[in-house]
Length: 237
Ligand SMILES: NC(=O)c1ccc[n+]([C@@H]2O[C@H](COP(=O)([O-])OP(=O)(O)OC[C@H]3O[C@@H](n4cnc5c(N)ncnc54)[C@H](OP(=O)(O)O)[C@@H]3O)[C@@H](O)[C@H]2O)c1
Image 1 (cartoon, protein in one colour):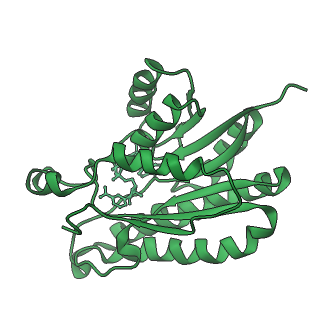
Image 2 (spheres, rainbow, N blue to C red; image 1 turned 30 degrees about the vertical axis):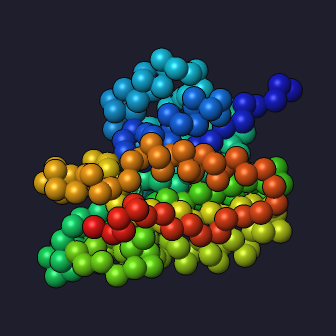
């Protein structure tokens, strides 16, 4: 039987940090399987990447549906040997705790926490079977630092941080690395245009962050950078 193509699966790959990661990995000769909800933006991203590299295929996916996650991960695994999951898809609001609607609360927890966990779960049997794997979670500094107007987002990221820390201890014996990245403010469309106009020059570039994540991915040894906080040189906004 022909060996399957190895790949990295990136969620939230059609925008911001995920898009930069996909560009960085694809141009570094790593085959990327890219997911997100909006197919048109995924196709645009694929077309951009295809100008410099053939290392890309897209699989549209809404991680708020665990059925969809299970279905898409099976489709990917049928065709590819996933080395690494970059769990990057995420949403937020920038409102005070009392102003978040319950619909927003449910959506943020469903996508950032439950969807990320379901995506990880869909790959654990695969990683166990092949005897190795890497899970890189794109969390946020708010997983450990208190910042106003981010209560639900912070809860979702802190929840995933704790989940991942427990998971790491359970899957060490299978040679599965669980890496938590906690970035500070990064210049992406997650921010309103008002915030970007005011603070973009103080934010990190998603391309710089992607280069750093690529470096972490390529550490070819038995060490695991378990938790890395990355802030702009000027600190938080
Ligand atoms: N920018 C920052 O300052 C910053 C700082 C720390 C951490 N982060 C984290 O970095 C990650 C990427 O954020 P970003 O700043 O690059 O924001 P972004 O440009 O808004 O990208 C978010 C990505 O997530 C995808 N996504 C959202 N909901 C999804 C769902 N239900 N299913 C699948 N994909 C979904 C979006 O695509 P679709 O809408 O097409 O699905 C998009 O590709 C997030 O987890 C965010 O919390 C960002």
